[in-house]
Image: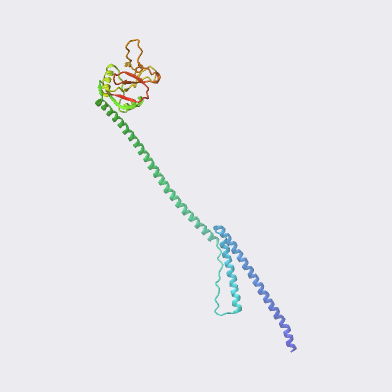
Length: 320
């Protein structure tokens, strides 16, 4: 009995010490494993951070993945504890999440090269579109140049047509003046019953191929007087002639610039040589600088000076 007690006194403390040593070793092993797991998680987090910075990805995804991995590991450890303690049959294991493999430098380089290849393809498409636009701009420029050339040709053609029309109108006016008016030598006179100022009347005569009438001598003056009296009888209308002294007072010129050498100014009738002229029929010219253009009376063919802006009938002459 004493021997058994002595044997127990020697063995039990050793067994107890062995149990405490095993538990301590287990705790040390668990602590070392936990530290290794913590270091592994930190290394993975650091690698994911560097990868996200290289690829330009948001930082939330790596943290979320790491959190899911940590949760999976904790759930896996809790499951092992439950299975070890309860020893349940047909227990459904929880899904385990394995940590994502860390990208290698070759993977990063491959990804960057792929992105660069995509950018190169986009630049190529952009160059193709720019080339297409340049071609289109060149075509539009060439078309615009052709349109300008066509417009210039059209403008020249229109100008040529206008000149031809002007020549035709002048030719027609000369023919009409000689057919409808009166012919005297190498001149034809044609009366126009349109009221115009002296300058406008001259412009219309020129457009028809002539000018305002310029009687150069008494023969032409008498022929023109007979034509106007017959055309406007029984009335007396002043009719513009191509005579004026706009350049200098008292210096009468024809519209072609030649100096007038024959005049037929109106003279008031006097019962006696010393009598004063009639106030309604004064001697001409009497307008001074206010009346610089000459009109011919249709009843007696006398000349009167008038304001050049007064609107009167006019008579054109045309070369024959």
